[in-house]
Image (cartoon, rainbow, N blue to C red; front, side, top):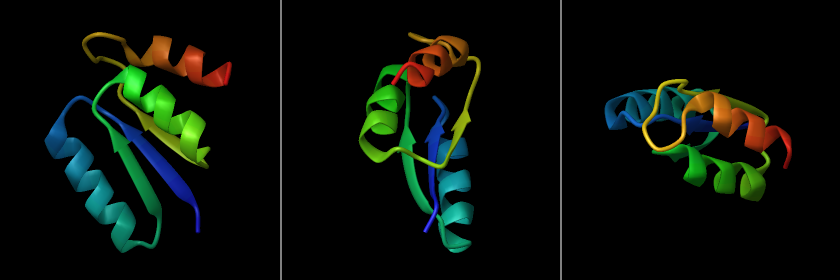
Length: 70
């Protein structure tokens, strides 16, 4: 089973994406901010990350750069 990580500060977007991806048979993890997303990426080693670019605290570009170093 493929694993997808969703990193988005909007709960509704995380919920809709998670619901639909789980329905299609994917293993889904979700984070509400960049730092938590980085931790989940390290822990679960997802096959795909859906990452919001505009988030408070740490934007998606910075989170992506840190995830690539993991």
